Length: 295
Image (cartoon, rainbow, N blue to C red; front, side):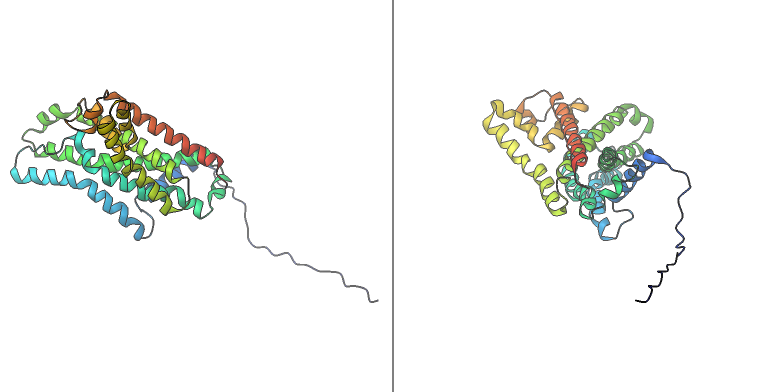
């Protein structure tokens, strides 16, 4: 038999080089994911179709403030159509639509595209990922609720006859508005993400978040008004009623006559406690979900 020829091989230099630059570590990774998620919530850096829904909802959230400022400019006197403690009542549906449209995208995109393993294989830990997503979506909701009220406050001040007198009479609205906006963003954002994170399918997540907002609302009202007694506690089932009651408590206001809060006849501070409980429970579910999800 002829002798087999020895195998030959070649080595190619493909130009791969190791990274020897600065390593910024976990804090920078968390901040980068936070900013990326916050920008994505408003469609920044994404295709044009991804910007339509956030922009439309944001414009709707600004409409009550713009209407009041427009009326004040026409009549040339101080107009008080919308008070800060009532503003959420005018924008609660846009806020719910924002949660339903954006929360499933924030939590579902990485599940659908199977990129979670890439995140978790680096400096970013599972808990870091969940906290960055929670913080970014809560911040987006805070901007959606606080920015129109800031415009309203500044516009009313500039339209008043005496700016310093206006500030002296209304300065307490600034911390109260901030507290209520932070509470709304943190609680509604956490629960919306907790619901949406259970599935990678955007349509399922959207329907589930919408159901939490809109299905519980009439059920709560029926139980409070028709059952009474222990049924009054059903007021805490509806996020709209909880948020509005908590906002009234922050501003030191009582329940409006014939409202569901008036019919429930519960201390106003209980709504603030329920809102904090919602936020804590939602955050815990999100953290648990991404601690256990397959990547």
